[in-house]
Image (cartoon, rainbow, N blue to C red; front, side, top):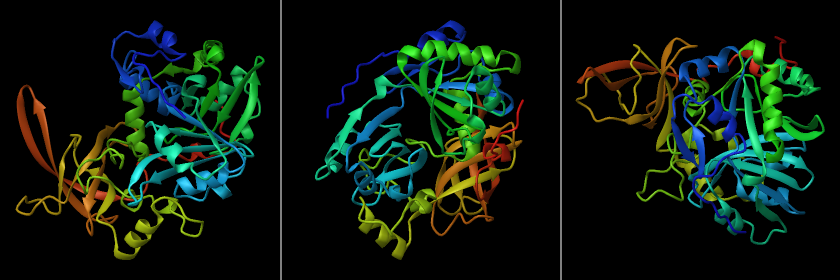
Length: 396
């Protein structure tokens, strides 16, 4: 399998974003030009939490895994037990190197018997191909062949229903269904990266514009908005979700030892299944489980309203002792009315309910100020409304 990417690519929805863009703030994601914020990141964020927000997922790397050994191959590749993931279901997982360190995380879509799609932020053609030795499988990079939209927020189900997607009321979280909209095939999964009620739509690039227009027409009276990565990032932190390059570095890219993380060090113990057959990193993870981990992922509720970007974490207010870790993602959460952060600290620090201190630096009119802020380690996400799992969702 070969994987060739050219720079400055445009997604099937690029034209729709370009038409509403007023800020001209863009960046490159896997070679595709994507929008940071088309008009106002604050308004886009509140669309996620109060209405319907639409995000372009097309640059996400998508690998189609097919063949008689597709299930067995994935079970060997990732840490969780894929054999219990039936057709029509989606599972979150991670895959590790031989040292039990996370290379990447992603979602596994079980489309049909012997037919899967793996979606991930990073490019893994070479790694997936090497892991396929001895298995009767085919691996195809279908990133450019599948357009994808995330439709998220409390009114998302109502908007999609008005747009013509019938039957979504029975779709449970992490389920998927194949349907048609005006004769155009669309796969809809109840998944997302916002921690809220939401869906992801997967379609042919040729149908992308028409489906976009149908959705926005249906959501016009309920405040539907297209959003960029800035608004999505804030909702991601509130939900406590991990981001490659922030909460962990891909193990196959790190140079210095001790810079990568295991699933246990990322709070993903529930994704490691030692009852299934052998998988990449199994021996190293079993040893780590026996002796204990070096690091722990923490979710911090921090006093004040100054986000703790890149802050060091200390066990006490005084800095007389060395730091025990650092913040990886931070934000002021408008919906939680809290100063929240994700971080990584050395064991045995960071147990839920304990108090730590973070050293925050912030600039006001050229002058830098330093603040030591108390931080409480919390368990679970900062934002987890009941509606994200409610089936059927409440109508709006």
